[in-house]
Length: 225
Image (cartoon, rainbow, N blue to C red; front, side):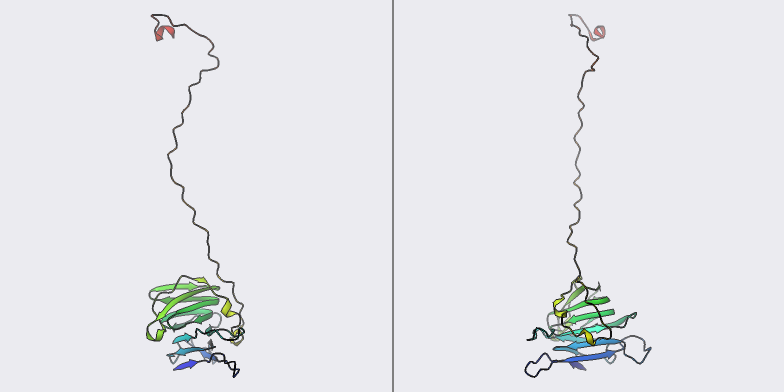
């Protein structure tokens, strides 16, 4: 199955948003869905499984003509105190958080953490993504929507596309995090071992040695002493 949204159409004053409520792999402890997915602005989810534990995301690369409209993306929010698992474009996401996801075809699947923690696994590599950070996974294969490489090291999230995202449609409000600050301090250089020069102690006569002697023919050290 497929869920898709329309990009901004200024002529008709329309803009597409889809709100999906899903239980994913969480226990059915109540009648209310546990996870909220907000798809908007020219984004689509393909290959939806019956329980929505697996899907493929594709987002448009075209920027909206209006600066007040955010670019296409997917927001995912799980309830506090839970851990939900979703396979997205072949990558495994375990989240107890709110995440922002984009996936242009043959580009990169970018997963940014806005609150909580997300664990992203693909191709034998696992990354822990904390608030203010994002990881990128290369896309290719079938329709340019399959993860074909391991997630990158966490990097600062790009805050600009988030300024006008529809956060009001999530179950609970969030505060945008400060982008991750990467440490630029260089590791201390180990000291280079050196050999200390030998210390030469000069031979200085004692100050109370005031006497003199004139050496005569036939004198020896023992007689002078």
